[in-house]
Image 1 (cartoon, rainbow, N blue to C red):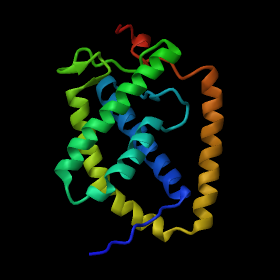
Image 2: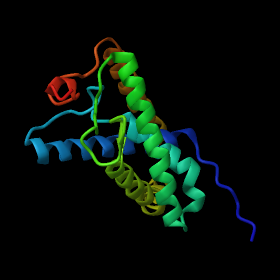
Image 3: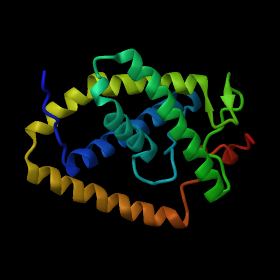
Length: 186
């Protein structure tokens, strides 16, 4: 059977990036609200997005979309890819800013406190949900939107993100509850 390869446009990925970055931000805000009973804007940026989730989601989409009908493989590969991304991001942020935004040292099977088994399993489940369930749904919604609307939305999101990134490059979001050092966990 000859399958036609679909080429997705730049705006498709930009909108997907921001949707996933927002969902990641929402996940962490809700998680910390339930555990700490306080609203905490997680991450180094001021806006409602965590780019690590957007980048991870785009990588999963690019690497594993063709494996959509093999969820166990998607699960295992998502665990590996997302854990590598989380480890690398943790290392980069610590080297660049001299601070840790997360520390899993107290979690079972952690690696230098940067990643842990529980996190990997959650990433595996989320990656499987993204590739096997969410992407087909996203494709349907994206297909109903006009190209002009998508491009305008991309410019707005990117302009806000660049302004936020520029501002935060001088002073990232390191308030109470944002990093482990701000809570004296280290």
